[in-house]
Image 1 (tube, rainbow, N blue to C red):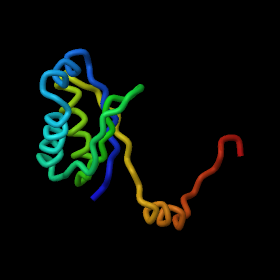
Image 2 (cartoon, rainbow, N blue to C red; image 1 turned 180 degrees about the vertical axis):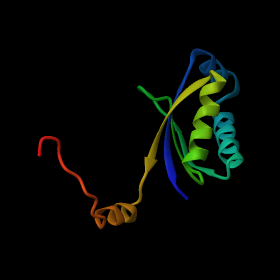
Image 3 (cartoon, one colour; image 1 turned 120 degrees about the horizontal axis):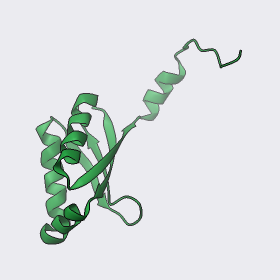
Image 4 (cartoon, helix red, strand yellow; image 1 turned 135 degrees about the horizontal axis):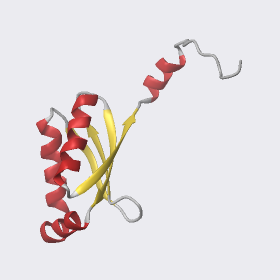
Length: 106
């Protein structure tokens, strides 16, 4: 199943919710969200700095990952940035492909 890195930042309202309900509740909500699209949360960590939460999710496909991101964004409590993660074997397969390309000006 494809893996995605979710970088989550809480809005002021979202941060108030975390203060009220705690971090474990947010992790449980994230797990339920992933399960609702046929996936699971592999890891979930709060962090200091420019990102509030880092989560790695296994979800069936890009449409499911987009549905998760849209659902979170539409809540108004947080924003997300989603990154597709690849295994070393997937990179090996990419290295064996021979796409045609011409650099600009060549």
